[in-house]
Length: 311
Image (tube, rainbow, N blue to C red):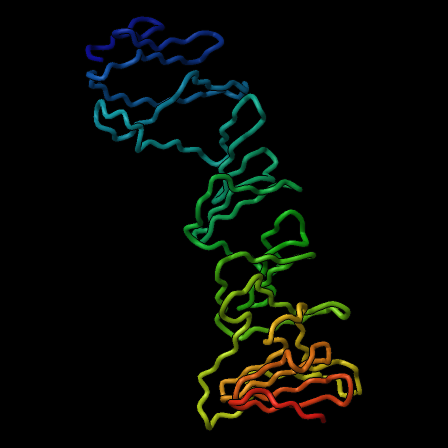
């Protein structure tokens, strides 16, 4: 676009551009589409003076704001829209209104939905019972800070992540908490508390274990250290019928049936009488116990085999 703009009466025109005024439209600015080779720099200030009559300054069509762009750059960057306090951006069709107020950006006239920037955090608020959703968010650049009374909820209020005290994270579920991973590494002490009284409180299960151990307890304690690697305690001082340790195997087909092995050079075999003594065949250094049909039997194992003796 080049050339002079001339004045004449109520209309100012120049090379297809026009500034006109009518009774119903206070001000109309028309600028033709610019070609890629046109060097144009236009600064436009639009002021609608309603004069107390309630009129509106309307701009039809798309608006591109290119403040400070090089001619022909076409990147539409660097522009800004400045709203004075109390001004609004109204969609005009669906009732949605953007209202700037201090550090908040409201999305309706009543102010129930807004985004607030505090300088250290960006807060999102939904009016009434409306939900706040993030769609297509791959990561949070900074962690979300919640107060003691707020929580991240899933499905309903019974499933949530929160923090009840400083330094503690709470994960709550009213039915089950399921963690699925090839390896779960817990660094620190673990306390498992169960309110169950008639079913298993803690279960470790490995399906079709072909090698290794289902559970392994290890320590780097020295010979002079004291303590127990595994301790089974019943805190109830009254006489109760709990069995401190029960070892059970469903299929009685292996000579490893109810076998307790140690690394001190001997092995203890324990049976409840459902297996014949001959099936409990140990190796040299093993100690075997079997309930049998009478008083039970014990056996010591040497190079010659297993030697059973009635108790």
